Length: 298
Image (cartoon, rainbow, N blue to C red; front, side, top):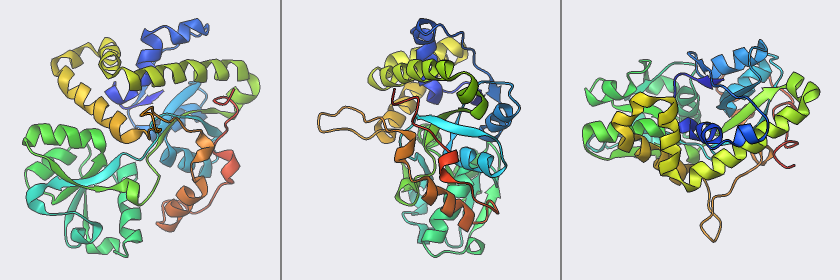
């Protein structure tokens, strides 16, 4: 189960399917999409209608506080790719520049909203000093038409906005303020307890797909197009998006090779504390219930 609709950001899974990595493990994998995004993924896992999901740490933490028995088992996009963007003429380069400004965001419970509120709090800015415009999927158009001063969203949307506007966007990177925004394969406690062999096979095949996607961006986009044929009309845009995600989403070692981290190598306590401090949830969950390295490390 993946959020929303087919997206080039899901390339590791499409590559794992296209290159036969799931078949090699004896797995018959199909993709479904949750209109509610990450939260929809968590709901479907909680209802045991799917075996695996792809979502961000934000959704994992909220799911656990609502007693949904899920765990992150594999880190996919290694870094936070969310930020606050604007046309250069708006001159917003740091959080204090947002005071008195209108911020376009998809929705109040979204990851961009969470990260924006954390950025403001860490900069000693009260949320009453800005105006949030919750505009659904119209974050780009709301900004480009001048209805908002900035828009808070995921890096791919910045790439799209730059293509439409024909100019570079200013960026206040969320990664400087929080690690929230990284993404994971998640599954249920039931799958881990009853079918650990299937979990291990799925993780192993997906890891192959992830590594191949990072090393071969053109082929990653081709795999995405196989699952979304209409995307061929904007192939270069999708390639630009995936290349931007790879460039910003993965650390490199001294030889320039991407580094793939374990779920435990995130500061889950800090993430949860930040979300609790801005009032997104009213209780906390034991950190050990949020992830396991059992499958990616074997």
